Image (cartoon, rainbow, N blue to C red; front, side, top):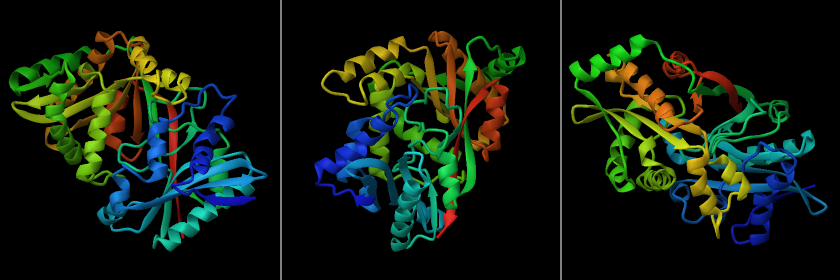
Length: 372
């Protein structure tokens, strides 16, 4: 068996890295591919802001010209600076159920991390702050939310067998449109609007949304800067995330909680187009974008990727306003349910907020680490 480092100029090996999961999951109806154009950009190390400040490489395990596994390993310099630690991430790990294969991939990642000066290997975690994290350990009979990893149930065993230990679990869950919030929450929300000068900013066009994106980033930074996995994005990374958000968003599904003229919180949600991504095999062109666009109107699921309030406004009744607007989004747009996406179990406030909303937790993704 050979471990092959992907050469950014070798189109054949790039295709092998990208195509392997299609082979691995060909009989699994739940796996949804990433957008192939994004992967090609990463593997070519072009036009992605991560490689302006940091480094990463991609590897495949191959035997008799058959790919049996793959992995990416990266050193995010900005994350390391922010947390004052030397950590390398693993990402895009996929493998057949063979500990020899997975061990070869992990040892390759470990050696790469050592050579980069890292003292810890951590992950799965991706190339941007907005990337989905973790390995799925519960909820294998559900489709993933957009951009969130899906994998077979044996991955947890492969990872732990090599010597990785659990760091934290990220929970995802459903909030059904049939769930009714306590009447008291609506009364509190109304009082907050009238007495606290809170109001909801909604959007109808993408151009209108663009003017508020930078404010959302500032609020996101303030709301989550103390979270264990947070690090600040560069201007280039933020611009990439903003462009992706605007392209993918239905402006009506993004809401801001305002306190007078100041942004106090946000609800970031997207129509779930996973089924269309699966049908198009993650390809936008030549006609994949048509199916993706139509799916926005067909889907009965909305993914809620970000719910947050500035700390100074938490506990002032504005939480009730956040909760009721989440329910309003589900009902007004005819969704059958919302999926609250990847709440870190260490974020007790967000977890308890979701419990108040009546979220039924059905998926769990796990991150791991090991000293090297």
